[in-house]
Amino acid sequence: MQALIEHIKEAMPELLLVDEDYGQLDMIDSEQDTYPLTMPAVLINADAVEWQNRRGLSQMGVATVRVNLILDCYDDHHYGSTTEDMIADRHALLRTLTEALQGFRPLGTDCAAMVRTASQFATANHGIKVYSTTYTLEVYEDFEPETIKNAAVPKVNIEILDSI
Image (cartoon, rainbow, N blue to C red; front, side, top):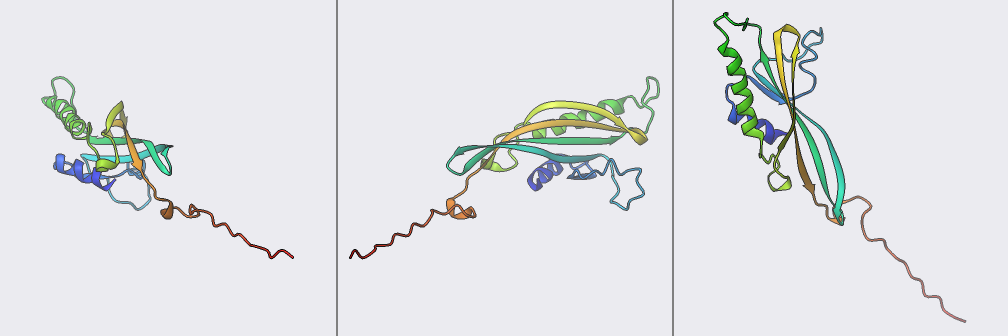
């Protein structure tokens, strides 16, 4: 997650927040004490990994990562408002984010490239626009038997009895 956060921040220095998604957008109207959600922001959620064995104790997983670009759209952007170009600016930010992530390998050689698989756009309270993009990537983990608890070769005791 950290490599992904750093990569996005380097590609998009104009973002005020790049973080793991732990419900910041859902807490915007909450009385709960939390860090403020400053925009433009990107929140990242590694939703799930489905694992399967490759060989021995090695596994390959298909990870799903959801990246939310969150923008404040409080200003009026209707035709004739003289701020219509802000719509194009929002889409340019989304394009920059997509270009930064499509093909990126957040785990280096321990994963395949990120591939965009879905996009969804929603409006939240307070004039907030959320551009949600889902990526999948294969991740690889290799384990040696000595690193796995109880995976050692079983011990066999053989007793030789004296015959009478």
